[in-house]
View 1 (tube, helix red, strand yellow):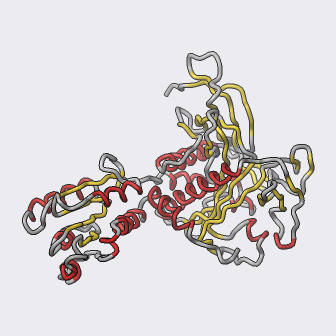
View 2: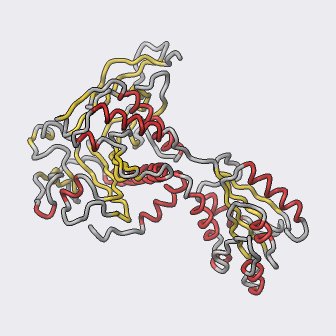
View 3: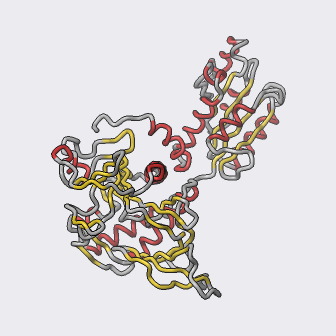
Amino acid sequence: MSKLYTRGEKIAEGKTKRICRLIWNGDDKPDPSMVVIQHKDDITAGDGAKHFIPKGKGAVSGATNDKVFDLLIRCGLPVAFEFTHASSTEFVARKCAMYPLEVVVRRKAMGSYLKRNPHVPKGALFPRLEAEFYLKTKDKEWRGAKIAKDDPLIRFTETGAELFHPGEPLALQAPFMTLTEELAPAEHRQQMEEIAIKAFLALEKAWSLLGAELIDFKVEFGLDTAGNLLLADVIDADSWRVLKEGDHLDKQPFREGEPASKTLARYRRVKELTDQFQVPKQQVLLFMASERDDAAPFLKSLAHYGFLEDDRNHMIRRIIGSAHKQPEQVLDALFKTVQECPDCVIIAAAGRSNGLGPVLAANTAAPVITVPLNYADFPNDIWSSLRLPSQVPLQTLMPISAVLDPANAVLAAMRILAQRSPWLYMRLGMDVNSRRKNPLI
């Protein structure tokens, strides 16, 4: 495949990647808004104390990075990654002015967190994702001043930022330096944390669907030439700590002395697993008994979660039909729509002696949630949704609250679908995460 661009002169280089100017074919000058990022074969640990260059590592990391960003883009996150074309070791990204910050998100207490918090047991779970900021430095120096340790932990204050040694107990430390210059506006720091947590949640679900557990990860941010804040980083096996059946899918074993050849085989396994990352096509089937039944509250709530009637991947299908008067029509519609997209949830909203929900539940393997619309006026009708024969697993989860607030029925449907969708798990997880607290901190 011929390339669309030429890689120009190098702009910057790190331990595992190289950033170069991009020149589109037919142009004389580099594109000021785009760059080419190359994955290097290098594997490093201990701030470069261990450094090996196993052939092929760059291509494996590139393939992993592609799949990770394909997932994050499908989840709607703002990223600098644009596309990979003709080369497995490089990709095109928007050029960004990087903030000198690293954002680490943690689900469990491991790694350097334990050194700073020795009172916390190894592997302790954070119900609320723990987000930390670190200052990116090199050679124990920050803008000409010597510092105690590279990549120190940051605690932001109203007047600046305090720096702490990342590998010593926080309770025994005072900040070794206080910065008064603005490292990033408070608004952007808040956005970085939010985007990082969203990315973590999406990847957490993607990994869990493969039987693995995302423990923590690191990302960086920058502003593109239009001033947009973007997640602007490479995300591969060097970026996270992931466990699958007790085995690391990251470079922790390399840090502990594993030969580089074994680490490369480990990275190849990561690549094979991330090839399976996906955001599935899902649908909500909204069955209503009559045109007179009000669908607006359900449609509004579904739209809040990103499900729309004209969306091909997260769609709503509205189907009108009485299970009493038109059973064949209702069942034909049921079979057809479930066959077209089996990953679905059915909401049956009907009044009177609501036979719609039980009939649907008896004739499909998809989960059915029933909403008795006339419960307030005819409470006895609820029994048609509760006293059911065998093999009719109807979920009348909220007979009163669903009528008072149809969003509860929609939320129940979303939680069912989120078990298989990183995109939806991320959306629901942000709300749940904001309401949790970490008792260990």
